[in-house]
Length: 291
Ligand code: G1P
Image 1 (cartoon, rainbow, N blue to C red):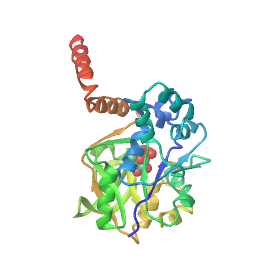
Image 2: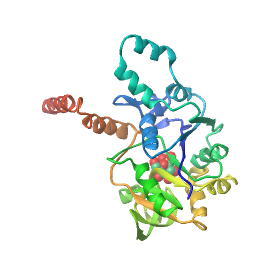
Image 3: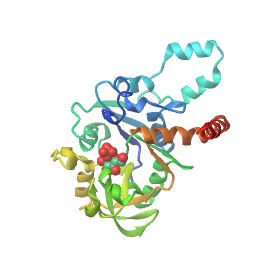
Image 4: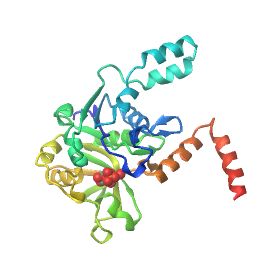
């Protein structure tokens, strides 16, 4: 079985749900506590053993490339000032030379199209796909859990969670088959169905392990929900010839592409920090007492 070495991050999205904050700044660069959102997602991939990061970017996204580049002057200044702790943290986050690739999705034609843009960089091997809006909080990262499962199952794996049954139109929804491993066998996949058409209330939370045959199925550029080329539709076609397993993720998921999810992520991750927790709690208590 081929190891999962590469991860694709589709970061070309316009971030319209977060205007005006995202007018000049990529949504992936918004700060959650002390790091940009994308850094959390990259950390999750690297924890899972990913060796090569593939970003599918777009215009106005160069801040992401700068973030993952070496900042020679900054590093030298920090070193001169003896700021070794922060310097070490920056260096630990730094991908090795040659470990990152960038390609552009020239026109925003949908998530499936963005993934297809990475086909040459991924090549003929299974890969991880991580949607950069979603920050996952759990003891063992969601993608690491999935890679461990993949080592037993092979095939394709989607992380899923339950949503409110009235909200299926916001997500890709899977059909639940026989229980298997840490979840179940997937029987169907539908992008953004109305509740009456949804095969279950298990939604795809933005973490995938996919086989490279997905690229050929994205090739014909068929459009689906919202007039976009959907990865969910291509996965449904791949399902005709390959197994798909759902991994039920049990940690916290924050959709940082929306103000609500972003604020929750900041609160939850600040409360996860031993340094910040007492300050945040004290502030919240006194603030709530004023209400
Ligand atoms: C995308 C996927 C959808 C998935 C969702 C998770 O939708 O197409 O299947 O459930 O991400 O956030 P989007 O949020 O880009 O509309």
